[in-house]
Length: 193
Image 1: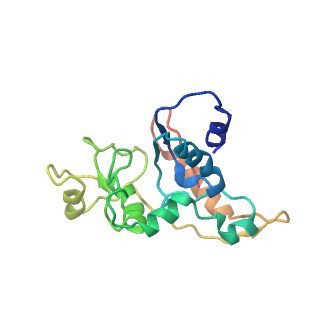
Image 2 (image 1 turned 90 degrees about the vertical axis):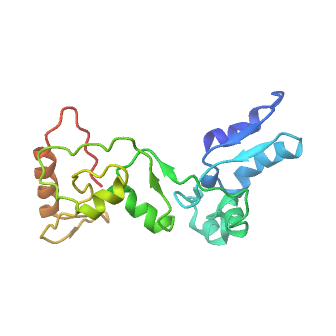
Image 3 (image 1 turned 120 degrees about the horizontal axis):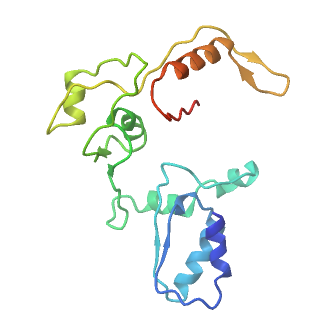
């Protein structure tokens, strides 16, 4: 967003083409900076995915008034099925087991894993084996034995409310610390959400 608004400071720069990446996160007033350049004859391409992150709005009252939906989101809804709305279905970052949730939830199962080699499992945790069908789905041309990459760990205990409005669960904290310490990998970065 900050670089989006910086486009207004480019007076005197002659542009031949403008690509606005992550345009689905921009509010309609912010995207008008780019559209003003289009009125001057500069071809403008908006790239982004309105299904990932919505327009960034901090004031709930203006979000309620409609600024919570980006212009790109509105265009995608009204132009659904037209040739200028394109989904790039192949992703190259996630293991298919991790990819399954966003694919099913946001893209109607349309995402495809483009990884030529699936990442290995991190040692120190008893990852559940994937079924033969899942492995065939993950790598239809070369199914191999593999393990699931999404695991839900049940933690007993109850949340404790803090005076400042937060909450915590001592049993969940202990289980998370135990799992993080048991993972065996050099320079492993663990993100706990």
